[in-house]
Image (cartoon, rainbow, N blue to C red; front, side, top):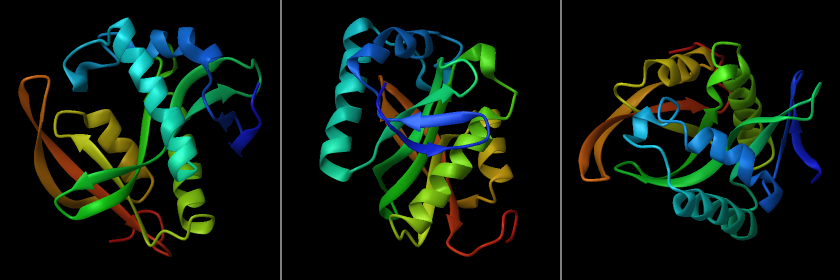
Amino acid sequence: MTAPILTTPRLLLRRMTADDRDALCAILQDPLVMYAYEHAFSDAEVDDWLARQQDRYRRDGFGLWAAVRRDTGEMIGQCGLTKQPTPLGEVIEVGYLFRRDHWHQGYATEAAKACMDHAFTVLGAEAVYSIIRDTNGPSQAVARRNGMQVAGQFTKHYYGIDMPHLIFCARRGQPAGAP
């Protein structure tokens, strides 16, 4: 197992490797988990996703990391930081996807908060964003619990569909939940 980048009370966040492919498939190939993407990923799309994270690790020093339960060593999701284009310019986004059997247990909030803190304290970011589909209420709730507020919106064209997205933002030094 690769060394953790971040630890939380219940999770280790570390770089994903080829050994994580099966666990990644359990997330990205579940149609309920991937409803905001409008489709479960094919094997090739999972491979591309993993390769893209590994490219990000080399290029940016960060990407989406494996979220591993500390008590079991099991990869239950992914959470991390990526550079994303938006109408506001390129931003650092905190993103998260967890296996369905680990929803509603606070893992996404816990992991995303650790990633946001890392962006502010280690990367020196002034702001961290989350780009969330307008129909994805649970992910929006995670952003709000971590003190993010809507800062804009735009429409992504993906998989042949126009998908409205909200841009959530938290700024350095802003207390959680502050306006």
